[in-house]
Amino acid sequence: MLSFFKFVGNKGFMSQKKIHEDQKYVDGLVNNNAFIIQAIYDKFAPKVINYIKQNSGDADNAQDIIQDTIITIYNQGSQKGLQLTCPFDAYFFLLCKRKWLNVLKKSNNKEVTINEETLSKDDDAYQLSFETSVFEDKQKLFNQMFQKLGDACKDLLQATFKIKSMEEVAKSLNVSYAYARKKKSLCIGQLTKLVKESPTFNQLNY
Amino acid sequence: MEEQDYILFENYLAGDLSADQILDFENRLKTDQNFKQAFTIYKQLSTNLEHEIGNKNKNSDFKANLDGISHKYFTKLEDQEHPIAVKKSFNFYKLAIAASIALVMGFFAYNQFSGGANYSDFNTHDTIDFSVRDAEGNIGLLIKTTKAFNNKDYKKAKAYLEELLQDDPDNVEYNFYYAITNIELDEFAKAETILDDISQGSSAYNNKAKWYLALSKLKQEKEAECKTILLTIPKDADDYNQALKLLNKLE
Image 1 (cartoon, rainbow over the protein chains, first blue to last red):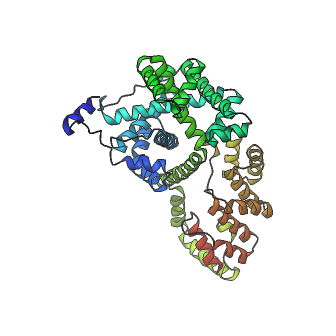
Image 2: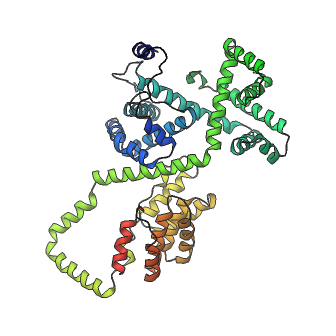
Image 3: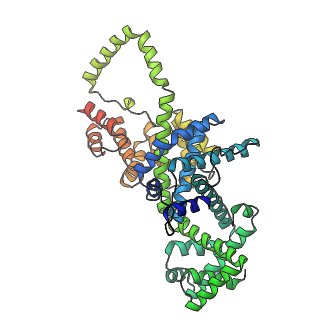
């Protein structure tokens, strides 16, 4: 919020936050651009690898953390049109670091304090990386809850989102259009309920 | 939320409400916190399903691409940090320099007469690591397969890969390494059927499959066929330099 007002103060009323030129990395991931993926490794991986090695990890750990982080950015970029308002470097490093500290926390039962150092809460990199972490937690929960659905709902949703046209879905399942449409909303409704009732729901910033 | 609410969510998202209904809906979003929260979750779930199911092929292409780049990057990194092979041969070189001159000359002489290319000069397979993938499937079996293959125990590796392929017969990676174990065990027909398939597909393994198809021919001393296949390997393939080297030896 703070930085938003700062920006408005500088640039006048209607302007939005400026998209950082490093948005090209996010767009490159979404478009599965091998050149960009390679560039992310070449430019941003060494810092993460160093950090993990200095904090009880090894190169294999770094490889997993980096890969998971890139997949998360790809997922968020593909679904939510992730807009980078800070350098990719800071954003990416914060995400990897937080992910690694969470792994340490889980595996050692050690008390790990996540020290965000010089970053204050209104820093764009901090905020964006935090949003991405929450996004990732949501995706995980959504996928877990989907597995809890009954087969009828699973099949219907699989067909609905694969085929896209509801008329064709209805035809392929041999039901009426109205029924397929109603069933779809009730199945997603059931998922909504499962998500709301899950024990981790309160950590998801709804 | 009631069933009616979820149906309303769907109609709103599909753009099937009248102007009045939209106004009502948006008013309710402003005044009813529970309604708003449920709608937010519903909408995000829809976007998630659209991505996970609707983009399934695109997502797995991305993951395969990423996997390849990541693997290459970290293998290179490891080679830079632990250049064991280079060190060893350097020491060996220092100690045995005199003897090796004779050996090298003998080797060249032998190559002159025997036509040059041997399968054993080229069968250095990339090491595999099946144990790092997602927790799906039998981790124990994946680890055993990885160990057997990397230790060049191809009989065992073949048996383990057969087990893996029973559960996942279309897995390109398993098929690819299964073909290599078959070349190692001189089961050429089996290997070549699989490699033929892979080399005609669009997976990350299609050029590698061509390279191994050529190696299979080389091991059987079918040099003309080997050459023909080598010539189909494109410049940007990982094994292009090796292919070129082998081609030079054959010519």
